[in-house]
Image (cartoon, rainbow, N blue to C red; front, side):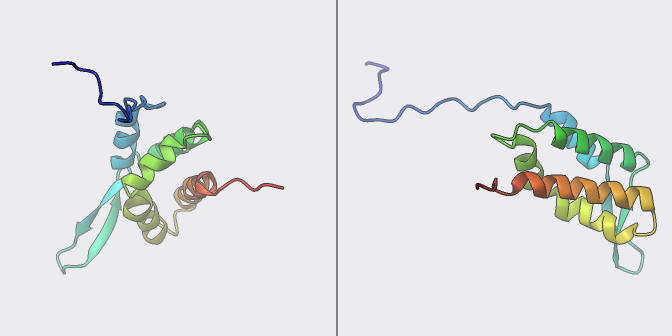
Length: 120
């Protein structure tokens, strides 16, 4: 038996290696915090101790993201980081200026990278 593909079959390229450390990015995202259920049954977002540091590192990943592929933005979207972490941080910790400022910057950087380039 031949291992050659049948005539007319499309050859699929192997998936490209990520241009960043996906494990580190995932670790940073989980280092932001988590949603917890309080004793009265309401949900509350609780940030981790190094939340601000994680936000700053995520911003670094976004700045270095390859504009042609936007791998970091795609991963953050796949993991639903905005909805699960950044927006709850903005709502819960609105009085913490530095945290709020950097969460807003991370959100803006992700949004900027997902918009299509403007052509003149």
